[in-house]
Length: 65
Image (cartoon, rainbow, N blue to C red; front, side, top):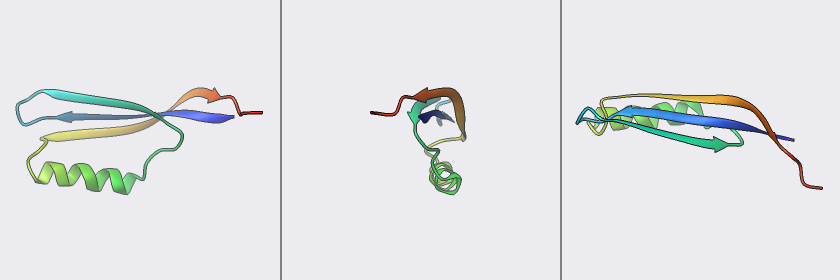
């Protein structure tokens, strides 16, 4: 069975609004790639702050027979 992970990103936009994106994934993305992507966005002023987490939901997808 394949585990179901939840990748969640929360950002604070320059106008003060928050934006949340949650996606079910089979594998967590590279921490370094995520850090690079969001730190670049922060440096460029596109976002003020951010957090990203990849969580195990405890759910499993059945394998195909």
